[in-house]
Image (cartoon, rainbow, N blue to C red):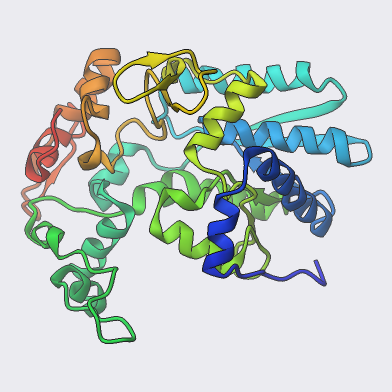
Length: 358
């Protein structure tokens, strides 16, 4: 890996990359994937969740291998089966791997399924509920354990280098410090990242992920600090779609006629009032089903959803999963905290506390 290093991106350059047209973004993504494969001598894998972003990424990686790299061609897709995915996602993971094999018959497509060591009930009982955002949940978790800097963020007391209020302050969520339940961002780390880390140590393969800068402030800052290919640090990682947007992903799926999991519904164009065929120019694209998939029971970002939110939709489309998620729960006499029980995760009381409909 000698000769490769992180390439920070100035903010103005980042804005220009985000504004590129889709064809230029596709070409640039191939360049980033090529750099990654070359640096690690092909010892790479695609982190494949079955979601639409990683569906596009897997296609880009397969297209890159078949078009720009000498054979033999081998594409490793790694899916962490947490048991929290929509059933449609579980099925689609196998279906898409088979589709890639048909679409790229000269590529060996390997699908690796990993499992976490803990289940969701155990994780929530020990570490707490995933609510609001990773940033806020982590602040609450650490502040409750005496971290004064995280407490200052929750109190709105953090200042930036110019003496102004820090953008990382989140004092509107300070009431979570007194919540009668545990709150943390540990679920994703334990259910997904630990299994991936173990795979990386054993296989010595380096991950390629479908992370996009527009998905959050932290991801944007990470991208501009390291560039798409983060060679340095404890866990090298390639993010060749960092400069893509949600609209880019949807447009690419439509243009290339890629299959996506049925839980998304159809991709349609909208003028804000009505839906039209996805090929209509100058209209915003969206899915008629779930807009995002991920883990079914995660509440990160649920308070921002307008119209029918993920839990209301789950009640309609997956009633058994809904009952397990919302129902159940009890106060633990040992510490007085609300936790899951054998009847369910008990998210209903938690969502009531933060004002999210279900």
